[in-house]
Amino acid sequence: MIEDYLNIITSEHRQQPKYIAMLTAYLRKLQDAQLVIEAFDLHFDLNEAIGAQLDRLGDIVGRSRILAFQPESRSALLDDDNYRLIIKAKILQNQWAGTIEDMANLFQQVFPDMQLKIIDHQNMSMEIQVTGLRDDLQLQMLNNGYVIPKPEGVRIKITFILELERQTIYLGAALQSGTEMSIYPIFSSELAASYTLPIVGCYKQGTYLSVYPKE
Image 1 (cartoon, rainbow, N blue to C red):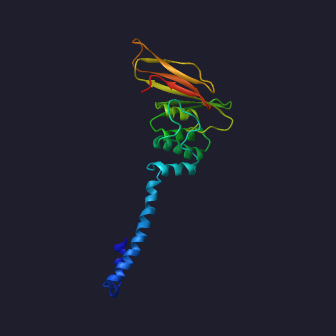
Image 2 (cartoon, rainbow, N blue to C red):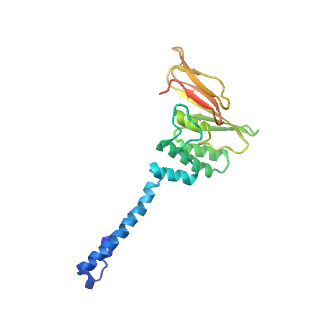
Image 3 (spheres, rainbow, N blue to C red):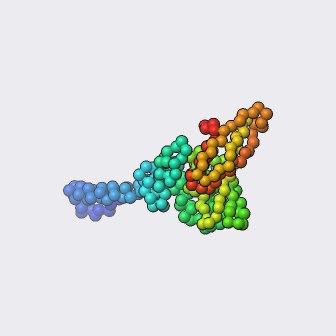
């Protein structure tokens, strides 16, 4: 930037060192300000922002770094990666058009490596089947409404389909609001090496789900 302006100085002033020094000092201030402004795009890019910059983005979209519930065996204060995830989900929720297709697209953008199946029972209730979600904290955030938008007055049941790669079967009880359930394994050499088992959870505050053993 500085050189560009110095190159257009007319010939009668180009050989004046004091004038060139004054103009260079002035242009350097403008150049520093320009670099700071250009850095905003990087530091406040949702995919690149960290720390205080990410907190500011969360404030703008209305999503706090501190969860409104206490996760089981985890801190309610999110790290940057999980905080970035729920900020993205909030932005997509704000843009949701209210259709099943848009809800599926929202989930696919937040969790590109996972699958979502939505079943509308046509009685003000719906079922959402999620396959491939393995992170316990993300599972709890999903179950507490931090990812999938909830239509007003509609009951939602979330079914987590866990694809188990070891010879393990998990047993547990039905979830109810305000309860905590842990699912423990029973090992058997007679089970197939790979199979799929659904685990059902409620879309309500205060319900926690653990799967053992934890990785």
